[in-house]
Amino acid sequence: MKLNHPALVRLLQRAYSAERAAAFAYVGHAASLRDPAAKAAVKQIEDDEWEHRRHVQAIMLRHGVPVSRRFEAQYWLIGKAISASCHVIGWFMPYFFAGKLESGNVCEYFVMMQHFHALGIREHDAILHAMGLKEKEHEVYFLAQIEGSRWLPFFEKLFAWGRHASRNDVDLARPLPVADSHRYCTTHPGSPAAANRDRQP
Image 1: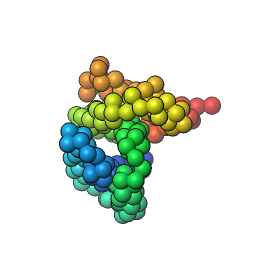
Image 2: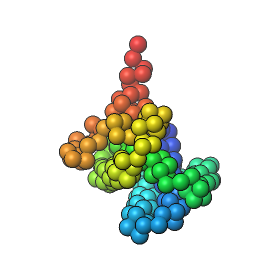
Image 3: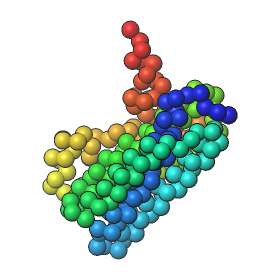
C-alpha cells in the first residue's frame, strides 16, 4: 500500500538517514573510549542503529517510500562530524548528547505508529514498539554513564535533558504492551493528537 501521508513519509525518510548518522557517531564514540566494556556497549548500540535502519528500510520498501537523497547527504555529514568530534570534546559530552538524541528518537517510532493507525495500518506495530523501547534503553544507558558527573546539572538546565527531564514518556520499568503503545508520545509535536489540539480554536 502506497502511503498518501506526507508527514509519515518524511518521518520514515528522516529516520532511515538519521539511523546511519547515529551509527557513524557511535563509531567515533566507541573509538574515543579506553575501557573495553564501555567500547563494547557503545559498539552494541551502533549495531542496534544499523538494525533499525534495515527495519525502517523494509517498511519504506513495503509502502514504496523512496530514500531521500537530501537526508542521506545531510545526515551523512552530521554523523561523520559527530564521530570526529568525539575525539576532541572530552568524555562527558559524547555521552550527554547521545542520551539526549536517543531520548528524542524514542518518540519517532511511536509517532510513526500513530500515523500508520490513522491510515488503518497496524502491521508494523510490533517492530515500531520494539525499536521505540530499544531507543529508550539507549537513553537510559547513556544517562547512567554520566549521572555522577558534576557537569550534568548544568547541561540538564541548559539542554532540558538529564535526570529530571526526558523527551519522551516511556517508562522501561512499566512498558506498555504493543496494543497500547500508541498512547506514548501523544504530546510530541509531530503526533496526530498534538496536531489536532493545535487546530482547535
